[in-house]
Length: 268
Image (cartoon, rainbow, N blue to C red; front, side, top):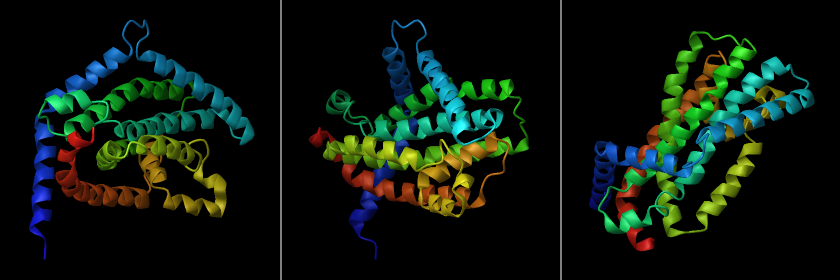
């Protein structure tokens, strides 16, 4: 039998998320101001990140295509897609940890729904990522990489990525407000996860040992957005895995947020 406190927590969490969604102007404005403020008085602005990413992709592509004995015309489109989307995933996870901490002043002096501050961080990450995403079509044009109808699978893929990043980010934002060591732990963990996720290498290069990647959820998140852009049909298992985690994760985060999000102001 469901406890009444669980129902109350679920309703409270759902109301918070719904109110944040209705107040989209708030977190959109905050995210845009964050991006503008970060690159204020810079001539290239946000495109410094794009330039840096392009140089990184070019350098790593030239080196690792030689190490892996792969055709650079095949490897550079691959690494450009994976590197850009790994940046979205990893940055969103890491910066979500500080969603409440960096908004301490607003939380203390306004009665804004808590999910607003998470959506602010995640929209900011996506806005910056849009600049880096411009690298992909340029690389595709240079190497004449073919595009087919499989690219349409990118749409459900990116929606599933966003849905998963939301519940993961909300949990980490609340947990980090309570325990201040969590952001440093997550940042270090994401650096380690980078090396065991097929960003620089292909899963097929591991042979039979590549099955271990099935245990890595970040591998599935990356795959469902990477493969459609590379002209490949999405992996059914990865799509199903990400759909299940999105549904279960968001159903779990609603009562969790309803129970603990209001306490954040006392932890800051």
